[in-house]
Length: 71
Image (cartoon, rainbow, N blue to C red):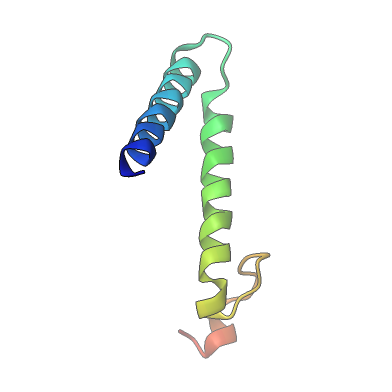
């Protein structure tokens, strides 16, 4: 079972690596938009993961620093 998981991880890493190279090296790629979309998606995942601990909603942080007593 462990070798199967390891094989799948290596395969997925290879696919992601080829996709990254094709985006960076392609003449028709919009690299900045792809990077921005990826970072926004990662930020959303972090917000969702931290929501049970921080008490925030999934929609993200919409308050200001004064909303939490200046912290």
